[in-house]
Amino acid sequence: EDRIKGLELGADDYIGKPFSHRELVSRIRAVLRRHYTPPPAPQTMVRVDDRLQIDFARREVLVNGERVNLRPTEYRLLYHLVQNAGYVMTHEQLLSKVWGPEYRDETHYLRLYITYLRQKIEEDPANPKYILTERGIGYRFVDFKREVASVER
Image 1: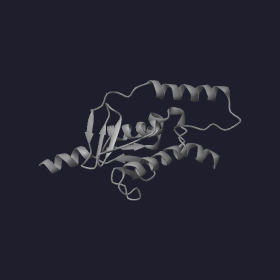
Image 2: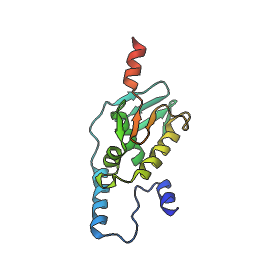
Image 3: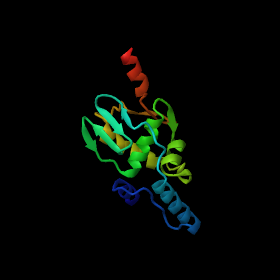
Image 4: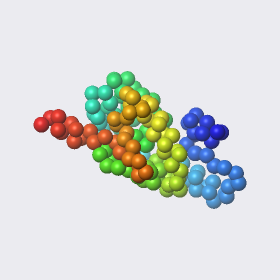
């Protein structure tokens, strides 16, 4: 319960005792790497639909024109999902990209942060239309590029 409460309050990680000094140093390096490595410059403004826009240059997410505050981990997760819109990203891929390769088996982190994101950006988090679950595999962000193209035709 303490681990879950800590993660829900914004912690990016938890390490249980006993732990090795090598593991601690590895986890610290992973956090520093994520913190100091800016993501590659994506398309600046992404308009998913009339309800959801993401401005990567400003690190802003707008839902119905209102700015939504995302924690750094939530933003990184959304960034990787949107940059791969239409494609399934496995649990391992997302965990490695967002938390670091040493977290590839920590699927509970991913489930928790997907829930946070859905609560912030989905109209109905219980029936998501942006972040879709691919059971047993991972998650997929809706392919808004194709949907926009098909509407324009």
